[in-house]
Amino acid sequence: MMKKLAAVGALSILSLAIAGCGSSTNTTATTATPQSGGTVVIALPEQTSPNWFFPELSLTADTTVNSEIDDMSYEPLVYFNTKDQFDPQHCLASSVKWNAKGTVYTIQLNRKWHWSNGAPVTAQDVVFTYQIMSAGSQSNVSYAWAYSGAGSGGMPTLWKSVVATGPYTVQITLNQPSSQEWFVRNGIGQIYPVPKSVWDKYPHSMSKEFQFIQNVSNSPNNAVYKVVDGPYQFQAMSPNNYWTFVPNPKYNGHQSYVKKVMFQYETSSTAEFTALKQGTVNYGYLPGDLLGVRSELTNDVLTPLYSLGFNYIQLNMSPQAPNGIGKAFDELPVRQALQLGVNQPGIINAVYHGYGVVDDTTLAPKPKNIFVDPALAKDPYAYNPARGKKILEADGWHEVDGVMTKHGIKLEFTMFAASGSTSYDHIDQILQQGWAQEGIICHIEYQQFNTVVSYSPSDASQWAVLNWNGGWGYASGYPSGGVLFKTGAAENSGSYSSNTMNTLINDTYKPGTPSQAIQRMYNYEEYAAKQLPAAIFLPEFPSLVVHAKNLHGTLTDYNPIGGVIFPSHWWISK
Image (cartoon, rainbow, N blue to C red):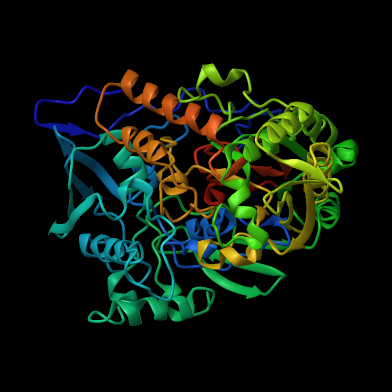
C-alpha cells in the first residue's frame, strides 16, 4: 500500500487487497506473432442468456453473463489488474486522487478516449451515469427498475455529490471519511459511463428515463447501443441461439485481432461439451459431471481458474415467505442445521473430481487473498447431520411424520434451482440427502437461470430457497459485504437484518492502516461464518475453462477479480 501524502494521495499502485491471485495452468506460453482474423465462439453457461445490455445493471439482471456482455462495449471508469493495481490502460481514468480524510476524490479522464461516433468521453458522461445509479438506488422512489449496486460502495447514502469541474475532471465528495482503497474499488469502480448525449432522453423526468432504459435494456439492436467506447460493437442476435460482436473501429485501446466474437447459447452441459469436441466452440468450460471424459477434448486445453467470491444458497427470511418458512429460517439453529447438512467434501469429490475448496464464509480461500481469515480454516459447521438434528431438537423442533416441526411450521420447502447443469443437479440431490437425515425436507423445482436470479424481497411470498448455481463473484479486490448483507441492500434478497452485521460491514469502510483493514474484514467474515446471514455456504469451484489449442492469449490478462476476460487480446493461429 502507498503511503498517503499530507494532503493528497495518488492512485498509482494499491496492492492492499490481492496477493497471489493467479491460478496455475497447463498451457504453454507462446512467443508467436499474433495473427488477425477468425471468429471466437464463447459458450455461455447452460440455459443462460444475456438480458440487460445497459452497463449499469438492474437488480433483477445482476449476473456475470450480463457484466461480461457489457464489458464488450463499455469501458470502466477505473480498473484494477490481476495484482490489484490501478491499470489506466484498461479504463477511462488516468488518475484518481483524494484528500487526507478520504472525503474528496478527483478523477482525471484520459483524453484519448472517444465514443464510436467520434465524440470525446467527458466528465458530463460520468456525472450523468452516476445520476442514473443514484436514482436507481433510492429506497423511497419506485422506478421501472432498481439499480443492483445499492448498498455497495456506499451508494447512495455516502455519496454527497458528483460534479464535473472541467471537461475531463470529475470530483466526488462523500458525507464522511472512508477507506480510500475501499471506496475507489467498490464505489468508483461501479461506474461504467454511457454517453449522456445518447441516453439522456428525458432530462426533466427520471421516471421516464428509467422506463426508457427498461424498454431498451434487452434490445441491443436499438440505436442507443451503436455509440460505445469499448473494443466491440453489437452486431446481431438470435434469441436462445447467439449474440455476436464485431470490433469497434474507433476504439482507442487495444484493437481486436479477431473479426468477430460470438456468445453461444447452450441447452445443456452435454451440448456444450459436444460443441467443444467438434470445434464449433473454441472457448468454453468443462462441466464437473464430464471431467471423466475430458480426454476426448484432444484439441483443447483445460485450465482451472478461481475468481474472487463464494458459493452459497439463498434463504428467504422474510415473514412473507411461503408456509411460514421465513420465520423458521430466522432462527439461527435452523440455519446451523442446514449448514451442518451440507457435505462439502463429498460434493467436491463426487461431483468435481477433487476440484474445489471447502468454504464457510463470504470469501472462499481460493484464489489466495490476504482478506481470507486464517481462523476460519476450521469450518465451524463441518458436515455433521447428527449434530444438526440435535441442535434442532434442543431448539424445540420435533420430528412429525419425518419432518421437523415447531409451532405448526414444518422444515419443508421448495428450492428453486437453475436448470441445465447436470453437475448442480447432482449437488442438489446431495443437499436433499444430507438435510433429510435431519428431518428437513427439500423439494426441488428447476427454472431458467434468469428467472431464479430475479427473485427478491418484492416477491417474497413466491419463493423459499434459491440456488442459481454460482454464488457471488466480487467485482473488486475489496470483498466487503454491504450490497449483500446490510439491511435493505440491493442484493440482500433474503431480507436478512442484523445491527451487528451492519456495524461490522460499516467498519470495513473506515479509513485505517492495512492491518486494521484486514482485521475488520476478518471480524465481518467470522460473524458471517457463525451467523449464516440467509446464506448456506457451498464449496467454491474453479471455472474449468477450456480453449482450443489454436486460440491464444486467453489467460494473459484474465483477472480473478471479477473473472474479467479480454477477447480483444486473443488471436487464432491458422
